Amino acid sequence: MNNPINIRPMIAADIELIYRVFTEHKIRKPLDYIIRCWDQNVIGERITLLAFFQEQFAGSLHLLTTSHYPYFVENGTPEINDFNVIPPLRKHGIGNCLMDAIEKIAFEKYKTVGIGVGLYKSYGSAQRLYAKRGYIPDGRGVMYQEQPVTPGDTVRVDDDLIIYLTKSKP
Image (cartoon, rainbow, N blue to C red; front, top):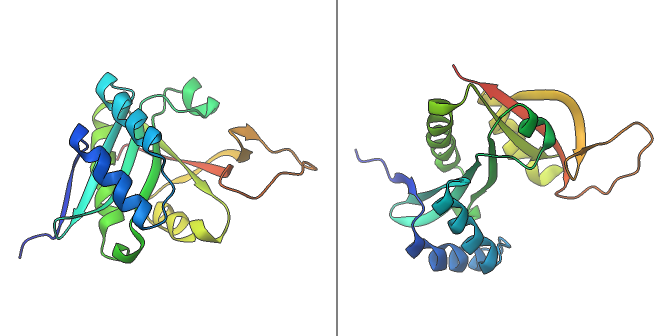
């Protein structure tokens, strides 16, 4: 039986497809952001993988060679970033296939890979996926906009409230 999931690197011709499908599914990714991601792929700052399920675009995942998170930068840890699977196509193993492929690429060059995950309910599936895949907290606590949240701080619960996790090469 053929695997209905295909993973491949992004190419320039994918820009419009990604924008259109994400927009149709209310995944807010401005066109200029997608173009910037492509430009970063060209210069080697980012690797973007795309997933196709039964030949239709199903999601994407990025590997930043240099993270925006200071602890990862200090330790030379690349960051898996901006993970999206089209909502009606979830629960088909697409996310795991994307993670398998990006980890394979990362572990060819690095001993450790990192990822950040949000803390509210919408991130619950991602939190569980990362734990099942062996990611553990980096021990730095919760971050807001890549900066530590200290006891007594008041922060907004939004996409910038994150805990960072790492996984070492098997």
